[in-house]
Amino acid sequence: QVELAESGGGLVQPGGSLRLSCAALTRIFGFVLMGWYRQVPGQQRELVASISPGSSTSYGEPVKGRFTISRDNARNTVYLQMDALKPEDTAVYYCNGKDMRNSGEYWGQGTQVTVSS
Image (cartoon, rainbow, N blue to C red; front, top):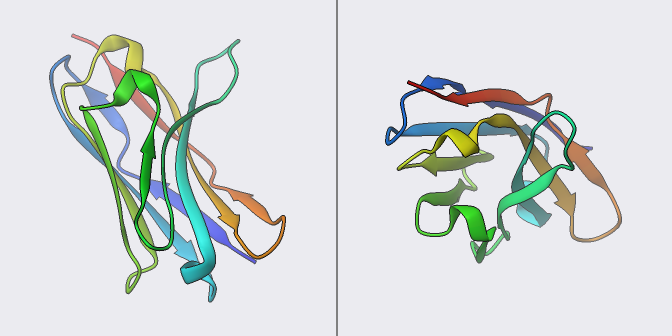
């Protein structure tokens, strides 16, 4: 079982930065592929970035070079550093965990990120 809680969203001007955090309440964090997704109303949820237990990373094309995902296995926490933010990055951002040993998948409640002047 994995419970996820995001924090760090808010309002930022274009070109600014935000850091999202996702704390995982679980004993199996070392087996969980962690990811960040985002969703705009009326559109499908899309993958922003993911990081394996061994810290291999993958990024969606729209955020490559601007966003950085990282994880602290000692603190059961994953981070998303978002730089050079654009208005099109505005969305609800969700933390996601996939247990790599089975089909278990878990979601946080989401945090709003708004990029606007």
